[in-house]
Image (cartoon, rainbow, N blue to C red; front, side, top):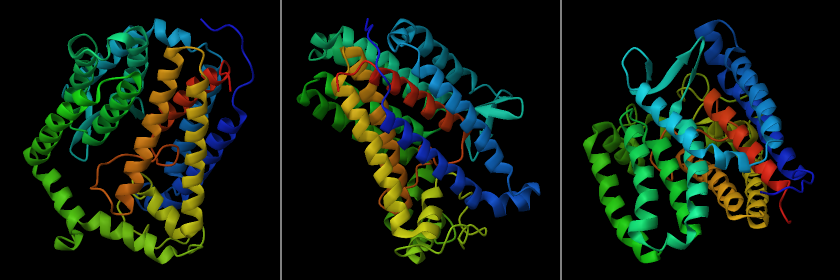
Length: 366
């Protein structure tokens, strides 16, 4: 167990807080019209996001002072609790359904999303599993199969909600961790082909997923239906140009782009702040990933390295998928943009994950 602490990664703290500040500003800008219309309060979404931001920041700095080795001790308990929550959310009357997915559990006036917690729990558990069995990871039966079996069990429960976006991020993050641990390429090729067939099956099993694929390939085929969000997103990005229309001057947030404060917040940001604003946000994410990779490389043990890799991979995958969807390079998945999109569970969990990363940085050799 590491004992010598240093100061946390200051650049990582600044980048995270800057992204959070941009996110809070854009949540208000993107949601003010809709919030005024629906709740008679233009700050409705902004105030809730601010509350979760404060909770998340407090949690981040608190967790930053908890030795990351403690998460190894509690890894099994944490993932069991998350599996229970994934089962509970499926119970009618307890799980809250939104947009066709039963993914939330109501807690007073707020709600939590168990699948978001599962992403972090899986990272912690795999970091423990892989650090203890790294020499066995080249074995399909003793290393790869048990780890992937647990991942796909969680994925199956998440798909019962259904929530393909969150499940995809969790599986992608897990595969990155397992690959970094030294799994054989041949095993990944075989499993990749099987996974591709399964992914195609999931798409074909649900008509709305097929529509998302066809609308991605040709959104103008159904401009008022499945292609509506992508078209409106591109209508937001295009006029933004180099410098944007100006903060608060978006046109697409006037009931053209549905719920612009969530998955498509990057489209509103690009419309108001232009190519320069969008590039600045991407630069901030790049800095965050760079610091995370340095922390992973400098961690004093395998558990810390795998834990840092998992957190960074999760953030990177979400950013790539979200921005890819917004600019029309990927089908709509319903994945939030870390630190920017409206969503209490996602924001709080991301800040907590950064807190773990900051604690690892206190023991890093870099």
